[in-house]
Image (cartoon, rainbow, N blue to C red; front, side, top):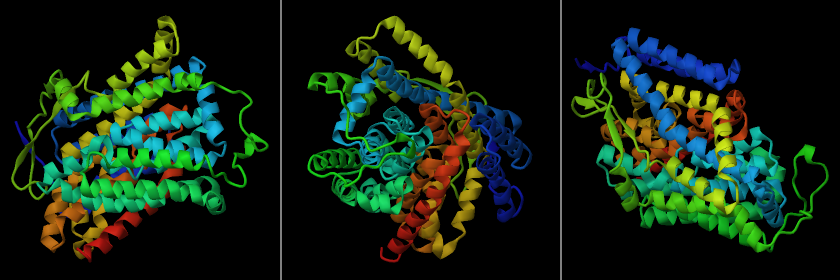
Length: 536
């Protein structure tokens, strides 16, 4: 038996939108005001969404439960799989004593906490985002900052703010490639618009994240470093996105930014070193000197990780590994939900296929990097296994949270709630270009993925733009660029960051910290998109 989505179950789009927004408003309230633990907020939000899907949207109960379970398994694999192994790799360096050497090597370059954030939370984070995407960059970079001595909340929040500019080009450009496939628009044109917008954001974000960390005066003290980091990132992203395509901008921009800043810090230092209040007097560096070989050995897990991520992202390798995927159509859901106009041009069965990509998943590449690293750092296999078991135990609640929020995302999509909110935004008429990034922002909040947001709202963005006489390439690109600001408040990202920094149960604190940055950032991108709509 099939079921056709109804995007206006209340007979009034306004009232239907209000109903669709109830789970989101509840989730915001649960985290920001009630300060619930992440897994409790996630579980109750899922339950509320299922009730609304069944009784307000008329979705068959079996389909509602099945779509939620489908989302929950997707949360465990591949998202949870990435988090488990990324955090484990970091803990392996700590357990083996190698992180002391890593800390020393970074401190020898700079002990200033602001500059460490530029190097790790912005540039290195952006490289991992460009190569792997999903939860990998925040999990790795936030854990690194905690290891360097950053307070966990600061580490998580700063990494999530910094991990914005590269997101639309993350995972070798998959969000924009998905947007092109969904809409039929030229991917090169979408990438060009996104590269311009995110190139500008690349100039702004380094300054933004340092202001968030150290205030305006603190940012001005390291303005030369911020400019080196931001200009090299922004210009490289714009150039590669405009003239090369969607696959390389995030990777290229991050590498150029990282190298340029590291070289700059060889010849320039701030007048005063910024440390946190509880760190005491200014640190001049480390008293321990390590040889080049010792430094390379300490960094070897992350060097190996980089190699595996690059190999796993290569199209030919990825295609070959995908031939081993186990593809499971979801019984009772696959192609039984029918999407309707105007979300799609004609009634279309909504596929529901679970893919167990046991080898192609980025998390598997990270696990193999951790296994090889066991030999490089000379850890016994017994210690390696025990550490992995301990890691699994510690990440139990973040995994529950991730599973819940993906369940919420899937029931919102399959019931039609997400589409209701999208259609409401499309009613904004001539100001729709301003709303387009906000729609992408909402999509990433709902799904935790810019790729999923582009798949969810891409066609709606195109149709609405054509109806009001705006270039659809702009609004589709705006969906992807607006989504980058939603990444920092996505429940999925919150769970990943909490798991990586030891803040399990304190997701609400991270949410309260990032929300005040996410909203003005998406409004800035919206303004940028609206101005461009007047010129294109």
